[in-house]
Image (tube, rainbow, N blue to C red):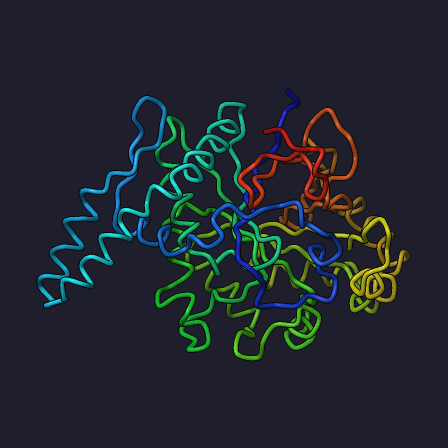
Length: 358
């Protein structure tokens, strides 16, 4: 088994609130991925909020007793009819319908942990992770059932749904989402940003709905006040061609970022999608990319080489990486990550069915 840097978990969302012009997900057909929790969201939500999961003989067992007692007390106290009680009981009995999914998810987590992985990256292929909080709660429960839980957890997001309150997102949350992420063990928040200097242009490129648009300065300030590690992942488009390399680090310092990743935009092999065309038209100028590289080499101190080959530098006190391999295309002795896709199988590549481990 190759050495594995991290475990990426794709949170099923059923569609994104954003519509990024360079969206990697839209450039691929993932019809071979069958979402295992699809159609079972009510049972999943009920389990993570009312039942108890325990490990018995290395198997996940759903203890219904707590859910049954709490449901019965609630219904009696509120004078709910017998018919409603029977429907609620049927929901509790439906737990078994997703037991296999929960067991498989636990086994994938355990496999990664047993192979020395200590970093989990919570990400969405076709949506924002906070669109499916029951799934995130399930991850947290199962992680804490592991003999040695993952201790370093990263959340990847465009930043939407982190600012509260906002009536538009009440269907996703009525609580403090930053606190929610802290409660499930997230240590690092990685903000995927399309324009670090201009909030309006960032929202335009990412196609963020108007009701969800945010001020990057205010959001980063709140993230740091909650004691998260803050990474800025910059998607490199031509909006940066007018900037100087120093500008990026001045801005990152202003936002109190701990880390910055310069992410080269990815195109698909066939290059025929609308997203591919946008990237061809709006990728950062190669001369600008060279200037950023030269600046990092001139002013940075080499901290180390990441296990997937990229070099990490300290530039003005900010950990800095240039990621030219966001889809992990090259074959290496060390795997950049293994991925739990929505079918709860483990893969070594995001977009390759044949890379399935099990």
